[in-house]
Image (cartoon, rainbow, N blue to C red; front, top):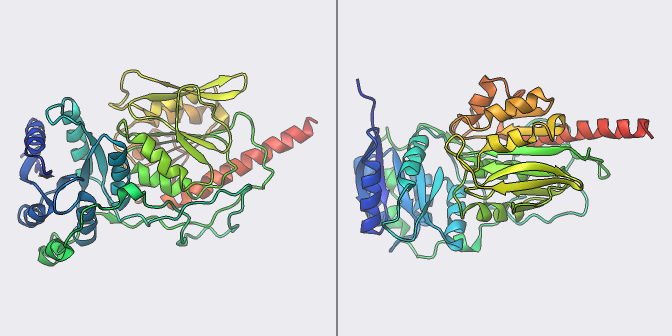
Amino acid sequence: MTSKKIRVLIVDDSAVVRKVVSEALAHDPEIEVVGTAMDPYIARDKIMQLKPDVLTLDIEMPRMDGLTFLKIIMEERPLPVIIMSSLTKTGSHHAMEALRLGAVDVLGKPGGAYSFGDLGPQLIDKIKTAATARLRRPSPTRAPFRRPATTNLPVSNDSAATPAASAHAPVTPHAAPTTPAAPSQVSNLKSQASPSTATPRHVAPVAPRAPLHVLPTATRHHPRRLILLGASTGGTEALRDVLTQLPGDLPGIAIVQHIPAHFSKAFADRLNASCAFEVREAVDGDRLVPGLALVAPGNFHMMIQWTGDGYRVRVADGPMVWHQRPAVDILFKSAVDLVGQHAIAGILTGMGKDGAEGLLRLREKGAITFAQDEESSVVYGMPRAAWENGAAQRQLALDLIPSHIIQAVATSSASHATSAHAGA
């Protein structure tokens, strides 16, 4: 008995791109391209008629841009969407906004229509992942975070999750729709959908905000203390949910997010606008110091090194690991002997097993380890692997991860301060 094929609708104003993508997907027996559309108006009718499982969506299209159409889809008839975005600065900002609005993943679209090359297998993997994803409702638009000179966040010992107001990043100006739309002509997907298709199987609410425990202003970190985080599908928003809830006086943070080249800088820039600490895309040789988070650049691995003046990162090419570059395992394994028991490491939402082996080795060295739980994950693959192999000490809902990190830092910092005082 054959399994049901994943039904895909391709939405792109370029006939050549529609043809090239259709031909690439035709190589996989588990995927069926049920239709194509040159603009959202045609796509709207084909969604109703063909009931696709996954949509690939261009951003720059005539009559209505892809971001406007994505908003309508996620409000009226949510379904997994993969954004095909141009490899430009503006395209990268648009892609980040699309992920905020609920898109499952993004793929960089090369400038030459015929240069699709090895992107075909990548798109196939993303479509298969998207078909199993738990959809998120759009994250709230966030106001810029004003970095305090010292930690000055609300203090509470209440562990119950409560919604927070607005400590979050603004919509990038580049991401604003540029083409006026006529919503009344397109935004009736829900009204014309059959009852069985009007609501997706998995729609997860945006994680509520938990009150935070706050570190003392004069916290002294062990010089070897680092925070290490890895994520894949759904990770851009999960990481933003976590990092924007952390105070600015934490140890250095190293982040690997599976993300295409050219998009990682836009991702880091958006985090930098909304976090209490500096966030930037890593450059080979960068120091990793308290109050700084470094994001691995797309298509490059990132590793931790210890030099005379502290930690630095090594950014380098190399073979893919778990079909990924950057790979979480590369980061984690580089920290096993250098950071060891001083690491606080976690794996968030994502497909596959990347990071589970490295996290296990960190735990065996005495690190504090955790994984995101199934209910709050967009894709419960990497966290599952880290839980099932014993790498993660705890599974946590997304909204509980910030307070867990803060508590881990505070506990270890207090131990370090006690030891330092005793040795004085």
